[in-house]
Length: 248
Image (cartoon, rainbow, N blue to C red; front, side):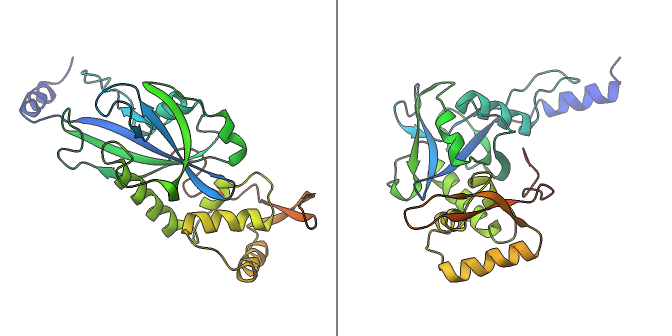
């Protein structure tokens, strides 16, 4: 039997407003050297027909013992429902919360945002799901102002800021390259995320330091290119991602 004190405390909380809680996903990949974000075209109001980030509402139960799902569970569920990808396929990491009044015309909604980084070879597996009419990859640099529903432009902007802050101090970039990759392929990730070209000579020295520090190692085989074969590298198996593989 539930203690009387807990029941009384629950009654006092009933007087407080309970806004809806959602999770929004900034799903990114590198296609033809450009950073692309996955967008869905909304199939129902509000903003029906407009592009938006994938996401959905946290499932909340009304009981004391069963209060619903965890935020990371909700993000993983939405990732699977909206794209067909699982947490084992991507780096999924929470980065910010958005709760400005009026951000959703239906009611007060607080959204916890995650970015999901997808290797380019997995991008073709993405499919539309949930209430989305379609899903498509769009180059981040080509999105015009006002293109996205809700405050999703702000969410995308903050996601990119967080990623740029962490790029040089974590293994975040490794989630955007194939399992084995050439130096130019890794440099393309840094250039795309930072939004500016990376000098080839300086970047090669960065890779040399990563090898010396035991972060990178040579991989078997070469990548055939138009000029000459490129050596392949891989991240050492023991290296953790920014928050571990999966949700953070």
